[in-house]
Image (cartoon, rainbow, N blue to C red):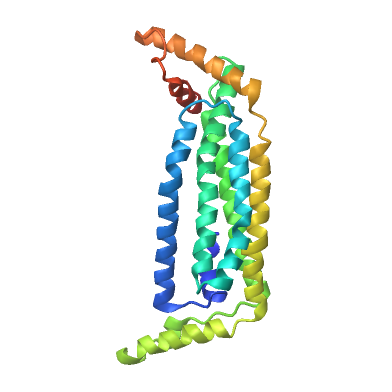
Length: 262
């Protein structure tokens, strides 16, 4: 979403120049504010063991993000541009922030389960590198699809800096503004349609898939409890070595954090 934001602002919202820079800064502020707001309850949720199925909670919150196209279109219909995009980004960020926690915790569960399966086996680097590899490949593929899709749709951009190079200083700003505006206006309708489909159909579709994968993640219930018990036993052994007898009273989160770290 963030990678395509510049194209969406330029090609769909038809915003360019200084206003586009201000809008991008505003969108960044929205991301920061929403993250700060939702990170507090997510931190409280993940800091201790819960009776509820963590995967189900995170999956359902992620699923809520598929309403973002409705929010975008509704805000666009009743509010001035680019209010709809601000609302879209806010919903997306609110429903994705907790998944960063979940991804790290789930990775910790898998690492701990692997360690407990075979004594003295430590393959944290393999798991972490594999997760980063898949993430990197996914990012590269999505960016390739974005730019190649725009090219196939007929995107025709003008290098306005080169076009206005050599103009008198007092004319350069006006030349840049006129060039950018004319570049936006001459784009074929297929380019705008492509960006609309990307934001309103493709992004929610993959968010739906992500939510389903989180919801159905197999490490839960008794399988997860076995990991916690194994980690608790390992903690007791470590505590005996360093002179402790048990985890601090009322601090179940010590076991959870130990599980996440392996």
